[in-house]
Length: 195
Image (cartoon, rainbow, N blue to C red; front, top):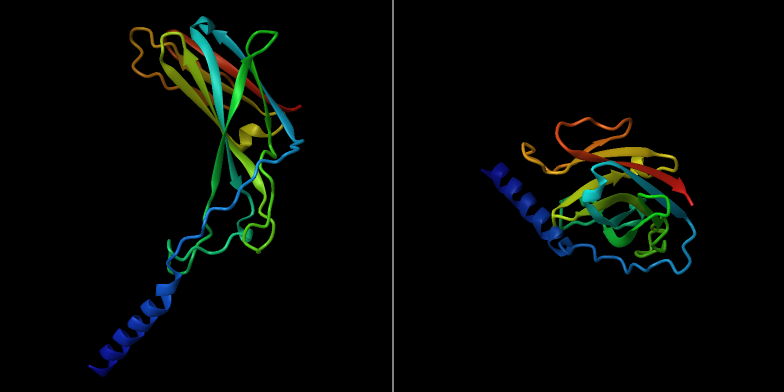
């Protein structure tokens, strides 16, 4: 009986000491970099049923690359975890002079800063969503990840046009070659390079 009482007392003390640590880590005061210089260009060529495309737009996703600059968040786990913060920025995907589309973006869109007194937090471009707006009002999207954003990376997205017999409008993604799908489709060839 005495052993059980000691265990209960120990658990009670542990829960009381953790009571003051249940606030989450506040979001950092993020600022846009006033003079970004790490320009990157995406060149997108379209083959196949390209007349179905009315335009494109995009979203950039940035995350803090070095979690050591963040305090532990004890509201999520008893031992604490480093929170993750994501910033999203819209970008323009415009028709290019040679057919297809192009986009210019900045890898250093957000200013690095010491938000919590634990060292400078560095923002890193970690993903891109490209939204294809079609003339029939339907939308399709392609997601690019860190590996697809390296300078010189080449990716392919093959998207069905939605003709009869096609049950899905999901685009098929490949890093090595265009994927052949049945029915009517178009293929985006996406090249990432330093600008």
